[in-house]
Image 1: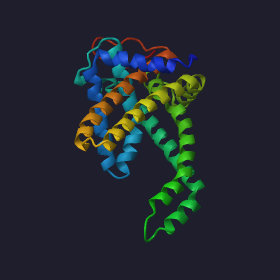
Image 2: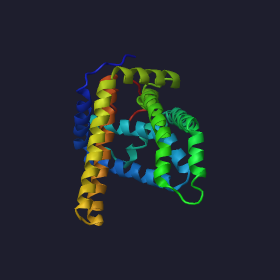
Image 3: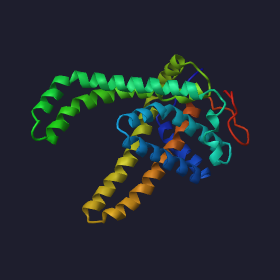
Image 4: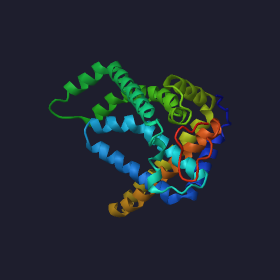
Length: 267
């Protein structure tokens, strides 16, 4: 398996190709965006276990997103029954769940290391605020751990970026999938940086505009009605752009049948 090395401009191309996919069946991807947002909100309401479950399920949800985008590419109408079809009777659910546990373990380890490196500083800050919390001091104390965790997470993201597709479509063992994903990300680091920076600029730029409108006196309810659908749209477009990243770096998967992904289908 070979990973193609693409120019920096490919980062823009992935977004444009994702937009083209979205235009084929916008309601289907908006539905998926709402569904995943609902799952995230439900998970956030359950202390610890909810967040743990969300992290562990991330590779499986990513694989379902990729399969849906593949159907969009081949003009397969995304009926409700097709969203879970790729993991029904295909034998990929268990490897994807193991991948999710590995992702959870890597994320937890990175967070633990980042915290332990600054443990004495964090503990001293907490002890000094036993009576009256100083949120500015707490924020400053958390800066170091967050930076270290962010650096670790860059490596974790590269390891797990392509693994849902490599495990689900290629049926690669976990170690090989992690290796190929890391190599692919390293070879395409410039377009990936362009891609991430573009989405970050779009997302934070939109929310900066919302903050400016709020400062100008626009009612919060009005801004909420504006921000919510736009966030759902941005998420749907983001999901659609995942698929061209994979298909331009690796060989695109075969077209599915007219109804759904077939068990055992591989590249």
